[in-house]
Image 1 (cartoon, rainbow, N blue to C red):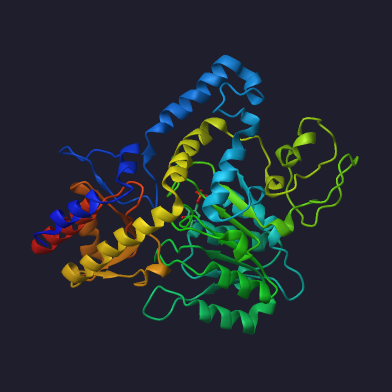
Image 2: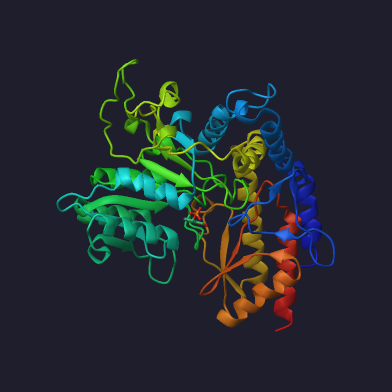
Length: 440
Ligand SMILES: Cc1ncc(COP(=O)(O)O)c(C=O)c1O
């Protein structure tokens, strides 16, 4: 343990992405110095550019008022009508989608509901929704209430797929076998990209293929994947996906969410221009004026003419002040590049996992998969001494400026984020756990 900090500093010194840490505000710890912040899986840190980005929009509002919708105040600053375009383009790059497959709107749970309006269409014997046991509660509430909204009973129609005995992990092959056997009763598979409690990353193309082969629609909750892992969402073949932008994407507390709808569902993609009314869309959808295709959005016509892409699911004009910090953060992602971030992430989390196992394995069990391909940056840890000891360790760390989170009944989640975390942060975590263990 003694040389840990030196080894960590040596690794930080050769990290090609080390300058990105300075692009963030790192909260101070009580006695001075920066926190070792490991909660990017919950709320990403504030990019230093965020404040200026918000102020620029406040200024545009002050100086241009309603004209700001259509007039760009400077060449590098979009008019508000176009504000979502750059965000959708950058997010599409991060999740491996075409720009027209992504839109920025609402928040995650709201978007899951709006997408299930279109993609959960129970009919005949095909009525079930498949999720994982222990899904994030909001997802569970959303699917259960969708089932009830269709006049059905979650006790019959909600299937919660169990993790392997003695672990929190789910092997995709078990899911495939189950779908082969029972898939003809499944209307929708709603699956996480990375499971929030275990940190397991799933093989999304495999799950999409299995769900669709069974005849179900497939949607992904990417709350813990977007900005954490490189994704190829379009190629995965899923029908839809939704994610928040306040975790790894650093968009700020309660920031606006994003969603993906595969191109094959692009409503009215071949709608001839100039038709007086929209053709019936292939999918039912809740509609609002911002889902109108752009040319007709301001014509205030009675007929809804859906945009040809994910944009058709938008309801309202976007909250520009809330989106400005996301703009600042996505610029950093573009500069760093998702592939380089992933390379650092694998190394950083890998070093933390290996050292932890070697030095502190008698105290902490790593619940997340050992294979780096099956996890993102997060490690979920269980304190072997039990629940009370786990709570005590979490509090010990917090008091010393090492910020992790606690998930009942027994998990400490630690996420070294490659944009701003360092090996020295990880060493600090390990040394503090070691100090705590010595005191017991
Ligand atoms: C996996 C998952 N789903 C859903 C949510 C809920 O997100 P929101 O409050 O943006 O609806 C969260 C929030 O942390 C989450 O982690």
